[in-house]
Length: 370
Ligand code: OSB
Ligand code: MG
Image (cartoon, rainbow, N blue to C red):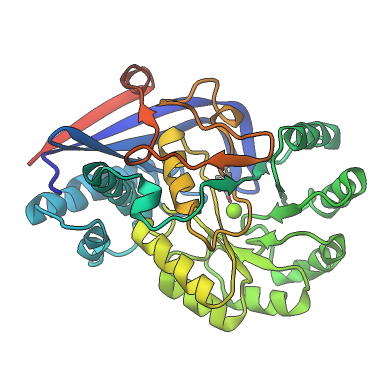
């Protein structure tokens, strides 16, 4: 495997509806697609960094900078790769910048699977034919809007409702949903909006039999999360705090988390995601796949990783139509009435990026030739 040409394609797509978290609102999604050209094959990846450094410290611009000035030269200089696991090893001297690394590493995985003539899910050792999925719902202006959305998503078959919370829109929202929708599997995601001073809010939430509370405390904390977890029966799930296998190991040893949201971009790629998956499995800790409002290409990678056996909790990988009026892949990602997505069996990511649609949403394109 050896890339002759790498293309970074800056994209812009409008979300069907604004998506609000405790740190900000996304209306227009900007991201970039990586294309790895090698003979007859193209491997595709997606960079999930946002325009602004609010979810984490990376941005689209920092990712492009790190890729152009460091990662791509390293790849070209190295030349031939026998297996995609070698990519994360090569990138190791570059600290962090995980989303930049992952966008390229994912494209190598796709290319590798395509060259082998197998699906990406097969290439990583996936075992499931179908994956169970849920939906992540942004903060709403009023409860009636939220109720309408939840009702709609339940009707579409989604297996789990994740609700974004922030101070002032938390316990009443979750309590209201419980009263209205009974024992539908439900969870809250705070995106780091609280501190231990807010423990009373979490004590009240602890009575609602939530599936989990995601990232209640600081993005760079695992210490206070252990203190909070010791006070709660509801599992805590870490998202922002976990960037690597080592972070996961430490958080598990400290009792900071009882499940982990794995996002391929946040941990630097598929190889690291598999390591975290295996670590959690050996501890009897289930994992699930998070989302970053991906286009079909990033979504396809998420579907493949979720086919690993310890992805035991429905994740955030919803249908293309939950985000986009038109996705850039063929076929689009569809969710069946039973809340599952069938893992594609075609070579690589198993969904074909449509050239005309890629071009339609491309703002800017840069090519690198070895
Ligand atoms: O915290 O999981 C998160 C979206 C952007 C940034 C952070 C998060 C999210 C989501 C959306 O929850 C998940 C999705 O539907 O892609
Ligand atoms: Mg989250």
